[in-house]
Image 1 (tube, helix red, strand yellow):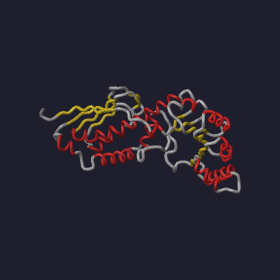
Image 2: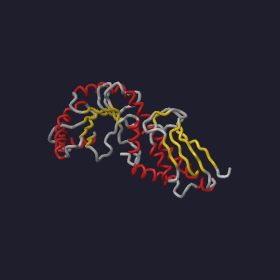
Image 3: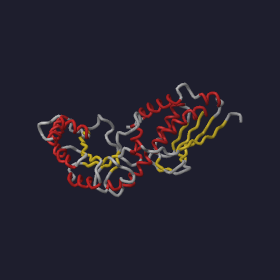
Image 4: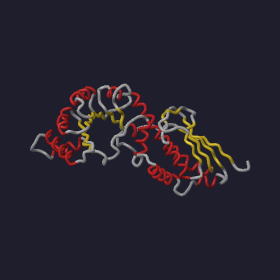
Length: 293
């Protein structure tokens, strides 16, 4: 999803937001012939992500800036480690600094948090997945960061798969008063599946154990057990019996994810990966040279 064209669109928007009419400080304070070399340096342990996006901030500010990213996305980083180096006119380097840092810190934070969740469930067969709880306009970047941390991506958008959630099921049940709610859900799902292309995945969210049988009968691909207790998750996994993929969602944290994985679910979706990841502390250490000095 993270193509060069998408990176450029996002970074151009960020640069225009940050310096819509240029950088007044650099233009009026710094000599035009001053040159700067700057190192992107890790201030804490984590997983690095966003190298191409960081580089784009400088390249799109001034194509003359030289950029070298030292480690690939997904690599571990330690305090004091140089992650990338940029060199060029000081005005340009300092104009791009904040935007480049913002992206790298945000993406590295998501990758780092994801890696911690992945480590907690490494002894099980469960995979950690993200959700659509992403920053508007930055979904491709944030989901790339999840993959760099060892996680997996859920559907990218509403257009990519059928996912019937609790409110969808409530509407279906209310519209079919002449039959039982379970039968209404089964029939509606079967009708939708019959009209869909055979490659389209269908997932249904349930919030009670007694909803599972009606969903299974429809022939869906994944059942999400939403906000189930650990005992309910174990019962749900047993009831489904390997016939479809089982996803757990709701109430997932670093403190609870291990126990959730040990219930036997296949996927654990975690909104916190993208909506609550703290930025990793990265710095740009600058060395300046002025012609004639």
